[in-house]
Structure formats: structure tokens, C-alpha cells
Image: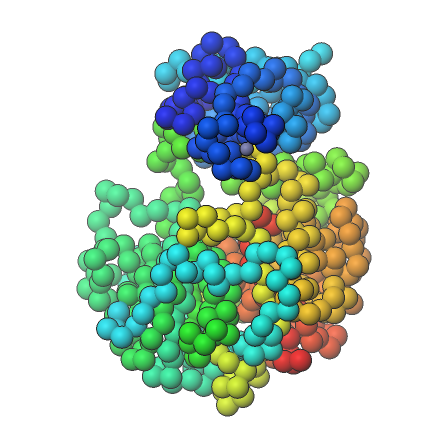
Length: 137
Length: 454
Ligand SMILES: [Zn+2]
């Protein structure tokens, strides 16, 4: 569904550039062997910037929970109400989660625990691609 | 600001809070007390009269708190407040500030001061009777943060007779609409999460959905809590519903209410209002000579972290805080509170933990093991008697759900219950120890109150 186009900044530009190539990259600290998302200037654990790199992630995951939005203040989402917002636990980045509109899943029919796969959507305002997740049938 | 008043630097304010486990019993246990309470009236939205501005109502609340405590303004030597007064409503940039408001008050450099924010300088300019304020602290956001800062400051000897203030404005127009939410692009941290959802209650709703799934519960099991909160709120003469819409709420009303972010419905969200509240905090020693019975502080603690001089919420691992993280934060806060106050969960006679949004009240009371419950059991507790006449009253203040969004009814009620002057809300059972605070499990401060300093 149409949503706001994220505007990259210096910190998260590699993430958004990778999305435009239909790849998911997340920060990873080689010293702590730890994934980190959303992006930060340093590893939250060891405070190192040098050991932090962008690492590709499969994006495979499982639905942790969800809410169904009936009254959003965000103009570009109002047309699609009610819509799902699910939280996805990423298989390959233990402890990390991301949020998704679960395209293809009817509102309020979200199967907690179901497997999901990564796709990409193009946002209308700037053409920036964003990651999304779909239930694996 | 009077020339001799000293503002505690922002970088130092963080040192007033207790956010770690293992700090031991609070060193000022029983030596600080709340005595006076002052409330302004409430209104849904500002009617643009100078005498109902958040600034005017703040002054009113402060004067009432002093009068209630039997303290004269020249005896006050400290002022602690939260500068922000928005609940999500902003004065439109293109709209002129009413002339009669500007003429009614001494203004600071910021023309919105007293109208859409409250600085200590504005208060002191407009309360010339406060001639002896020596210490000023601007604390983060909520009354719980403001009150805790004042309590610690009194304990530390920075002030001995301290006014505590929190005001909220609410203007006409729909909440959070416009601004960044009206744009077709998004910058800032919201682009990884909140920009996909929208309503502020989404995170709590999502955690609650997981909770229902994990423990096999239903949203309807919240109904007795919300009905009880409204009932208690209607017994709170200072509150919004009691003053303006004295309508009881039924379980059917609750279960049929429209969704905002399912499973959070309209009544799981608190109603934004305009109001101000104030307390007078002092030493246990001075409190003895004041007009009301002192209510002693046994300890305080909360969840959060300090970074670059700012008090921030406990960090979540991913984009959004999970249920388990919220539960972990709530349980840790419980342990910190018991440690600080030197009490056990079973010593707590009543709880006034925060409820705006109502759904996370569940996480808070499980975190302190109220009534002996553990994770997954709060909704079962709600199916028993939780009224003010029960053995384990839940939210006797009625909280934000019962009286509107201020985040201070819970503190007022705790103090009044222990003073024995909660009026129609006074609990049947004898009470000695209670606690109140907020706001969310990841970012909070709570106070353990007692009718006795021991
Ligand atoms: Zn690291």
C-alpha cells in the first residue's frame, strides 16, 4: 500500500540504497557478533564505529504480533484504513524486529507465528524502495 | 526569574533519578514528604481566555498547593516543573497569539510561554509573591519525572519547601494531524517504524495483542478495569469526566467502542485535556508544622538511561519494544522500588500506576506483583472485585482513563488516600503504603508513599 517515502540521511543511506537494489542490509558489529537496527553511529554494545559494517540479511522472519490501524494521523495511510501493522522477528538477526504492512493479508487476519518473506515496494513520492514482508503460503 | 534563583543544569537533572538495580535503600527514606495539593479546573480545549490559559491555571494550582499546605509564598525556596505542556496539540504557526493573553501576563522571550509551554522564568515573573525561590529544576515531560526530581532535591538539601508543577494545554483541531504527518515523505527515526503505523497507542496495542496470544486472554477482559477507572474518576471532583461529562461507562460501551489501533479502542486511549496540577514537597521535619498530614516518601525509582545529559527510555533491541521487553522493564522497576523503599510487594496496600494507555496498566501491576499476580494474570485479577472497597483496589484514582490526560491524578489520589481525605474515593480498608507513577514501562518514575516515615 502507498506510504510516505523515507528520506535517507548520512547514517542510514546504505540501508536505503540497498533497498533500491532490492537487498536488505543491516548494521552488524564484527567485534560483538551482533546485528543492530535501526542504524546508529556506533555499536550500542561496544560503542565502536570501526567494527560496525553493513551486512546482507535474508529478511526471512516470523510474525511476532500486530495491530490493526483504524485511525491514523498519517495522511498517506488514511485511504487504506483499516490496515495491518505487523512486527516481524528476523530469523537471521536474533532479537531484532522490523515492522510491516503485510501486503496480501486482509486486515485483522494476521497469523501470529507464520513465516514471512522479504519483498520490496516502491513508494510514490520519490520512488524510494522500502522493504516489506509477505506471509509465505 | 529572581536574580538569586539557580537553575540546576540539564546535565545534572539526570542524577536525581534512580534507574539501576542494586542501589540499596533510598538514603532519604522517610525524610521527604508531600503535604499540599493544588489543581486547576479542567477543560477539553482552551477557550482562548487569558484566565484559562495553561499559565493562568498553573499559577492557580501553585497557589492552591501552598494554601493547602499552609505555606506562605515567601517560605517556598524551590520550584520544579516540566516545561513542555503539549499532549500532541500545537499552536498553529500562522495563528496570532490572542492580544488579551499577551496583555494579561508578564512575558518571556518566547510568546508561547504560558500558552503552549511553561518556563520557570514565566512562572516567577507572574508570581511575584515567590520572593525566595533559590533552586529551579526543569525536569523531563511528566509529573512523575517532575515530582521525583523534587523529592530527590529536597532529600539532597537543594531545597526544603518546594513547589512542583505540571501543566497541559490542549487546543482546538485534531490531534497530531498536519505537520510531518501530512507530508508524503518521512525523515527522522520514525521512518523505520512509527511512520508505518501512526497512532501513538500502536506500540502498546501490538504488545497487548502478543499478550492476548501468549496467555490466551481476550480484550473484553479489560472492560472491568476501564469501567472501574471511570467509576473512580467520577468520584474525583478535580477530574475532567466528573466536571464535564459525569456519565458512567458500561462494559458494553467499552466493548462496542471504535478501534483506534486494534486491540486499543477509544476508551483504552485517554482524552487530552487542559489542566494544571501542583504539589508542595518538603522535609519530614518541616512537614510536621504544615496544615495537612504529611505523606512520606519511602523511595523512588524508574526505568530509563542517561545519554548526553538526557533522560531517555530503556532501549529496545529492535525497531519496537516487545512485550517481553516491556515486562522486563516493569519487573525491574518493581525490584528497584522495593529495594529503594525497603519493602516487599506484599506491603503495598494500593497501586496508582499509570494507565494512559489503559492496556499497559496490566504490565505495570504485574511488574510489581500487585495482589500476588505474576505475568499473564492481571486480566484475571480484573474479573474479581477491584473497586475501592475491595482487598486489592486497582487504580483508585481512576487515572487518566477516569479523569483525562494529565498523568497526575494517580499522585494526587495516593497522597489523599494516605492523608485520609480522598472523599468519596477513600478506600474502605486501612492503607499505609501505596505507589504511583508512570509513564510507560520503558520510561518511568514511581514514588512509594507511606502514612508513616518508618
Ligand atoms: Zn560491538
